[in-house]
Amino acid sequence: MTFLHPFWLLVGALLTAAFAVALERGLRRGRAALLTYSELPFLVAATRARFDPARAIGVVAVVALFGFAVALAGPRVTIAIPVHGTVILCVDTSGSMRATDVAPSRAQAATAAVRTFIDAVPEGTRVGVVAFAGAAGVVAPPTSDKDALRDALARIPLPNGGTAIGDALAAAARELPAGGRRAIVLITDGVNNAGSDPLTVAPQLAASGIEIDTIGIGTNDSGQLIPGTGEAASLDEEALRQIAQDAHGAYARAADAGSLRGRLDALARTTAREQKKVDLSLPVALVAGMVLLAAVAGGMLAGRFP
Image 1 (tube, rainbow, N blue to C red):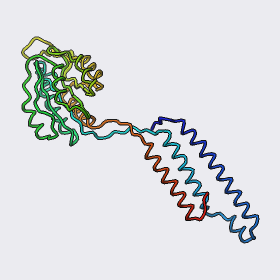
Image 2 (tube, one colour):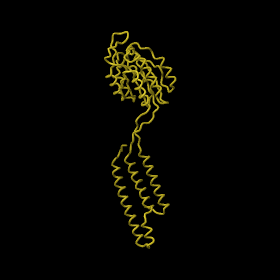
Image 3 (cartoon, one colour):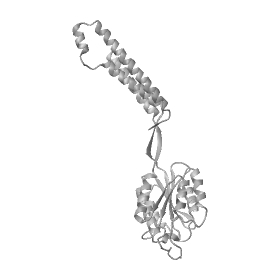
């Protein structure tokens, strides 16, 4: 918990301490005055340990007074709240995704991980799928219908062609609503070689409130070649980290199919919740007011006030 105006905590502590001391002194003076004019039986009864309504009411009033000070201090707590937002999954289908350094292949592992994401995302969250190689296309527009999303996975093209990450991010952004919780999850090996520069596109999307999380699929220095080419299968982690950083997201590396599914499963659960600061000033003030009213009511019932 944090406080917007912590000064009021000190003021409240001093005031409540002064009030408590004044209350105790007043109670002692009142008791002494009564005993001065009492008979012996009354003296014995008065000095016997018993519940003192005035003291109890005073304690409640002290608590209420400090509660008002806490409310003035502006208490804030950060909590994770469920948010039914929209998430677009950008799946790389370029030729490099044919590499088998992630079994059975990068492309098949990515599709399986996307299915895991769809299964894990909380109900109500809208999910869309964009596939990209040298160009980007919408496989499934955002929907909360998980069955429709699972069926759409069969329409993801086979790996072929270049890698246009910037164009994929832009296409995903066009599928997102104008407001609310919006995120893009980019699943790729990160080696961009076509279309717009993703390091230019990512900050632009971040400026409009879109978060981009990146999942790097593949390995470096595996010695494997991309099937049908003489190019080495690689992973551009530096670019993926930069994209995520520029768009207030996170980067995770998935070197094998199991870890890729695990990464997306965890991401599915976090993209539907966000940390939010909640102002507790009004609730605390209301509780303090109710406590004070209880003290006043108790004083009226007991026929006395502290």
